[in-house]
Image (cartoon, rainbow, N blue to C red; front, top):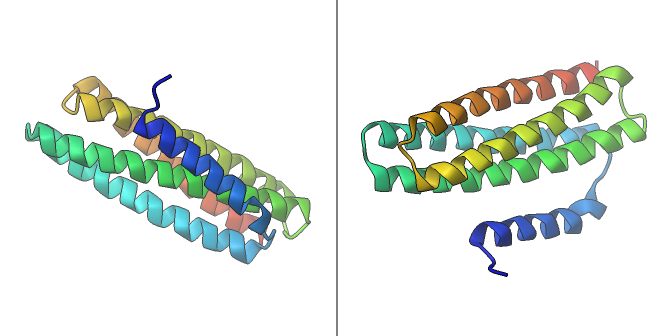
Length: 164
């Protein structure tokens, strides 16, 4: 069986997540800090996406490949930060550290959805690393980025609502 850099990175991310699991605190303040990390990672994904698309549209294939590779790594980091945020949101719910229970439940669900959207975008970037000027995959990645943007906004809204 051949191991790819992507599978090695995914294994490393899983090990890191498992290693950090005991450090989860079930504190809404910590969850908010995790949200800020996720938002920073998301901003980096958006920036790399724009750079990659700019290169692809200009026909600079090698530069686009590099930028999509960077976007791929950034989206993996975003997925990891969202999984950690989901864990914090779930612990916050389990421990009753909220004002609005249904909103806290929605925060957990929206964080899961954002994580899935990030994973989908990661798959798009993996393809775009190989064929960076594909109009179909560029359009698909743009749609998935918009879906992720909506999910990220909903996560933040529900987390705020849960503490009000």
